Length: 305
Image (cartoon, rainbow, N blue to C red):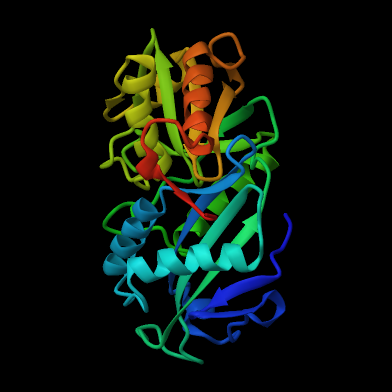
C-alpha cells in the first residue's frame, strides 16, 4: 500500500514521517482509540474523485466515541472539510482508503485517562483489498465479542484484537478468511466485514443485534438490493448450518467492498463460484461509488471542482 506525502495531524498538515504518537500514550497502552475508514473512488469518465458516504462514516464515528467515552476533538463538519483538504494537499487522483483515527494522547496516562485527544486523517492510495475471484473461509472458534463486553458496534482499535485472532487462526488453518459466531452460536460477521447470504434467491444478513459493526457498506447494499435488483434483504439471526446450505455468500465492507465467498469450512457455496445476485449487487455497488450520474448523488462528495 502506497503512502501519502502528507497527513492531517490534529488539524495541521504535516509530512507523513512527522505524524507520531508517544509509545507510552494511553492510545498505545490501552487501545484508547476509535476510528473510521472510508473510501474515495476515482472516476475516469467524470475526471473526479468521490469520497463515498463520508457523512455516514462520521456519524458512526460520533456514536463510537460516545460509547467509548472519548470526546471528539472536532465536529463532523470540520472533519469532513479537513478530509477533503488533506486529499487535495496530496494532489491524489486515484482510489483511496481514508483513515480517520481519534485517540487519547495522554503521555503515560492511566487506564481511565480521557484527555488530551488527538486525531489523524490519512488518505492512503489503494487497490482492491481482496485481489481474488473469491474467498475460502472457515468458521472461527473465536467468538465475536458481546455488546455487554466489548461492543462490536463501536469501531475501535481494541475490537480488532478479536478479529485478528480469528483471521490469524483461519490463515494458519489454510483458509483465506474467517466467519465469526456469537456466544449463542448464531452468525455474526467476518473479521472486519459484514456477511450476506443468498438462499433460493432470498438475500439475508445478520441483524444489528447480532454483535456486528453497523456497516456503511451494509446499509448501502440494503438500499441497492431493492432499488437495483428488486429484492429486499431479510435481517435476522442466522444459524451456522445456514452457511452450509446457502446458494451464495459474500463479505461486504469499506475494505472488502463486495467479495464473493466460494467455500465455507471446505464446503462449496452453491457451485463454488460467484453467484448471480452477488455479481449484480457488486456491479450496482461499483456504479454507485464511481459514477457521478448514478442514483443517490448525496452518497458521493466530490473532492475537486
